[in-house]
Amino acid sequence: MIPARLTGALSLIPGLIACVAVALAAVAVQVLEVRLFGRGWIDAIVLAILIGAAIRSVWTPPEVLRSGIEFSARTLLEIAVVLLGASVSAATVMAIGPGLLAGTALVVVLALAISYGIGRLLRLPPRMAVLIACGNAICGNSAIAAVAPVIDAEADDVSAAIAFTAVLGVAVVLLLPLLGVALQMTDVRYGVLAGLTVYAVPQVLAATLPVGAVANQAGTLIKLVRVLMLGPVCLGLAILTAFRRRGDEAVRRRRGPCRCTIWSRGSSSASC
Amino acid sequence: MSLHHLVPWFIVGFLLMMGARSLAMIPAAALPVLAQTATVLTVLSMAALGLSTDARAVARSGVRIAAVVVLSLLALLGLALALIYLLALV
Image 1 (cartoon, rainbow over the protein chains, first blue to last red):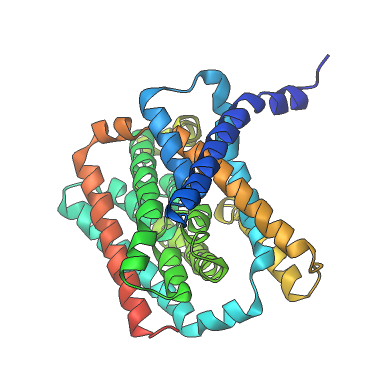
Image 2 (cartoon, each protein chain N blue to C red):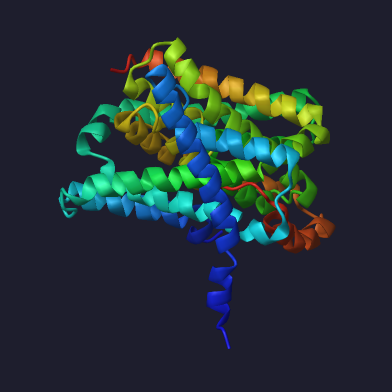
């Protein structure tokens, strides 16, 4: 009798193989680029996204691949982030400095306010606007998922918010390096830019690795500061919601199923 | 709201690795290996990300939400650039 853990691990293999195939294709294209143009204009990391998305647009991967793909998209990237911690040097932290750290916190707060304002201006319901604001300003799906029960958001809103911000977040990863080149940014500046704008910690990796280690470390640190703001923001929202929720018992009953549906629907990967 | 929900495990891991590096607890020979592994894992997961991105379903769902997200991103970008140039980073 095969233990459940083993079958669980085995079920990951088909999807993993699919990802390896796409990854190899991406590397092959990059090697080809260097042969033809002398330089890898588009990095394997970006190519992997493009090739994967191109395949997805014409062919829906069968169910058997799903768990392996989800595992690769989330867990492998999270492990990569952990490994990255080993490469952050003291020099990078010094280069960041207290001014930038405080500035990052300020940017998060302002971005939250502005994003919420835009959402309400375009007539989105308040909770939806809050979800999107948190996803953009702080850190992706984790922010949305953490904030949702705090503000009694509906499952559909959460799924839509996650889906949109995730797809556009991928666009940011793809386009940000171009902006960095256009503005002729130094590695540190570009890293900070990536850290301040990219949707999820692992995506900072993807956006900065092609540029260099310094950009990578700077970006990840800045992104971490944004992520750590999740606590204070959740607290603030919880307090605000407490005032609103007086007498709204019906909404509270929805909170249970709300959490489950998030994770069962959420196809997007990197969580925070 | 437990700490587990507020701080994902890999961030704790990242901070621990950062600490280990700062305390010179990681052998020098291991560093490039760790970096390379991180790159390989990133390419793999980006492949997965691409394979999971259903761009068309998202496009179908709502122009308004897309507009808010795009505009918010632009605002965030503006704020970020302003901060970088204001602080006159190296």
